[in-house]
Picture 1 (cartoon, rainbow, N blue to C red):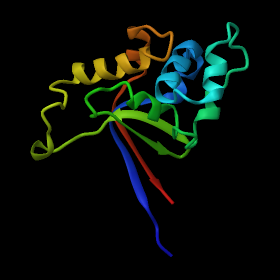
Picture 2 (picture 1 turned 180 degrees about the horizontal axis):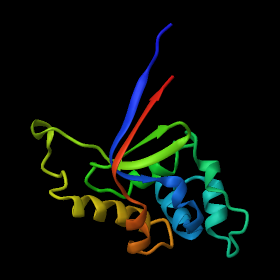
Picture 3 (picture 1 turned 90 degrees about the horizontal axis):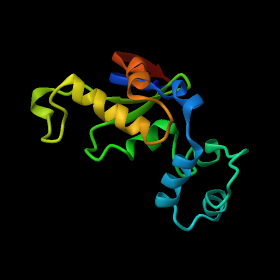
Length: 145
């Protein structure tokens, strides 16, 4: 029998904390850019009333893994990532060693926060201050299976 371990470590947030603030119109605009030929997306996007829209229909690999996966699409630097531990999805910036640092890596903790805040604001109705309160500067979770 083999065991697999993984970690979520860095600066970020648990995406379940932003779910109550999701803006369905913003999500549909994103989905229509990513899935321009998807009939379900086009149908929802053309509706005035979005009652009943469920982002989970487009998650679990259909085509996005989770909400944190969607958030990575709003980071044009490619430095933020997502992970899952015990059913919780995290959107975060992982630590890196000096020899692994890329040119587009953030230069400060404030820059990491700004990138996370900008991504979350793109799909929610949250303020920068609300998002900043949710950011954990010391994420560390280990999963196994």
